[in-house]
Image (cartoon, rainbow, N blue to C red):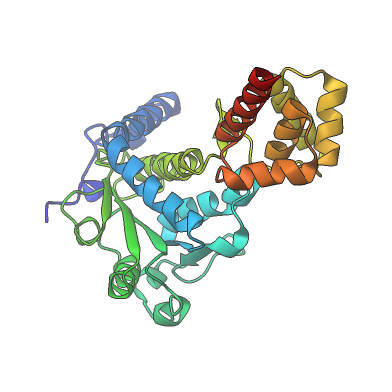
Length: 305
């Protein structure tokens, strides 16, 4: 195990408190930029982790996000946005944060050493599930205990840490190392390390959605439009993908009860809601495949006439 870079002193730290605040802000900004760049080298590992997560969702398994402290907040934020962004069913998502998700401004630090309750919380873990474990140090007892339980149950482990050669990464099926430089404020991993973690987590979940067919030309087509903002976004997506006018896009969205993929197939082909959903089931929910299948059928009909 190598020395923890997350605990080292930043080269701009000496005399930081004596500088003008504008200079301090500039150093902090540069620290964030440098941390974000650490994610680039992990793209291939993130892609493999995302594929494992997609497999879990396809097979009806659960995604378990596990972390403590600032890493826990990063993990929870990603998990809680999967439903609204990509319509991943809440029943397939679990969040395990040391000490529980905070409901106020205080977040106890000692809980990251406590593992009580983890066995019970992960009692239903199955081999088709995926555990996304996050720890800046890569040595957090709470997170390591969860990984051991996952391995005992045959579940897939996707691990994110900011220090290489750590137990968390060594115990993972898909290890994502984000070698961020020392924090400007030594050990304050809510800063650079947290920024890199958030980027990696967002990449994981977004790439998972792409793999699941929930993204079409950069549009989040698996959402269900249930408010004014989303209905406006949804009709815009329908028009872009199909080329139909506004009134037809609105009509299709209403008939599809806000389901964008269904509405796109209906608007593009003129089929009923039931038939559109059937086509999507036949293509595993992949919108592009569904539209291609209908184009192929129409071409075949045209050749026969």
